[in-house]
Structure formats: C-alpha cells, structure tokens
Amino acid sequence: MDDAFLTLRTFMYPTEAYPLMSRLEYEGVECFLDGENTVTAHPFLSTAIGGVRLTIKKSDLNKALKVLKQIEQENKENEPEKRKIPEAFSKGYVLVDTFCPNCESRNVYRKKFPLYKTILAIVLAPVFFPVFFMMKKHYCADCGHVWKQ
Image: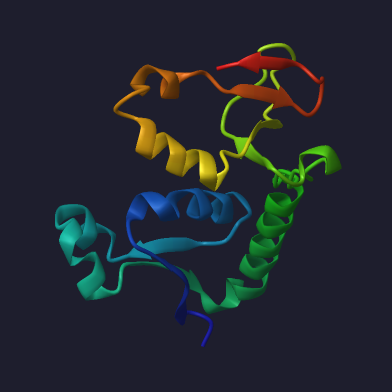
C-alpha cells in the first residue's frame, strides 16, 4: 500500500513548516500540511489539534530522511564557532554584548565590579550619587583596543 501517508514532522504554525516543505518539494518528495487551514484561521487551536503536520507518502520516506540529514549537516556547517575566552580575560572580566569600534570584533570584555564596591556604592550613593555613573573601560581581545563606554 504505497498510497499511505505518514507525518514527518509537526510544527506549531504553518510558517514554520514552509521552508522544510519547499525543500522537500524541490527534492521531489510529495508533501502537504495537514491542519494548515484550521491553524491559519484560528491560531489558538494549534495546541488543541496538535499543530500542523508535514505529511508525506510512505514511499517517499527514505528520500525525505536523506533531505533531513542534508539539512542537519548544512546547519552544523553554518553554525558559528563558540568563542574561546582568552587566558588574559578568563578571570575578573565579563564578556560584553558590544563590538570594538576599532576592528568591529564582538570579542569585547570589561572588568567585573567587585562585591565590596557594590556594597560601598549602595551605602555612599546619597553622598556621591554622580560618581556611580562613571563610564567603564572595555577591552578588545582581538586587537587590544581599550575605550570607555
């Protein structure tokens, strides 16, 4: 019985399924979305009906699994490498979500604010309030540039 259908993957919304569906169709796998119209008309029903199901013919299962494996391999190749913290910045520094104005690297650090200084800042805040808005030094681990931000 080659005309039997089976669910390859389920998605919460149809828009999440379209990229995989178009890739499968490009590779020659016949597929359709089961529950697409219901979820499009009433998105809050997605959980109740089990989401949108990407359905294929049972005879196309091997071809579809090959495509899924290819996509998984492509995603691994395009995955960004995890940054290694340079030894000089391993202790006492925090990775900052900014970029270096000199080399545009995202490998930027600043010194940690010690606990005793935090407590001192809270105690002395009424007296020295403007002092605590001082800019902090940032250090680029790639080019060595130092700046205040």
